[in-house]
Length: 68
Image: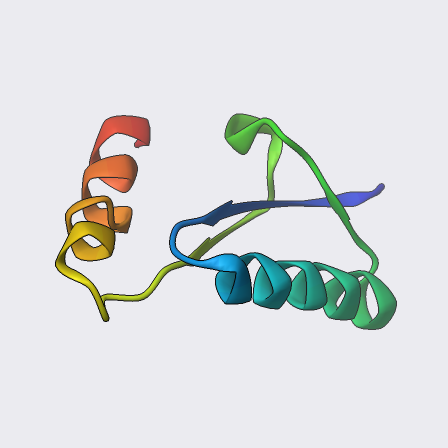
């Protein structure tokens, strides 16, 4: 059975790059395949930063609260 991974990324282009690298690593080492549907995922990965106030306002807390 294929393990599925959903990544939610907030922030800058560096965060997007980091999310891509994490997805590649989790696929190569543990066989996780990306899914766009959080409810299908075995693992949810939230990638954010709080360097800027706006990024923090859009952070994982409100997204998680709305999707649990």
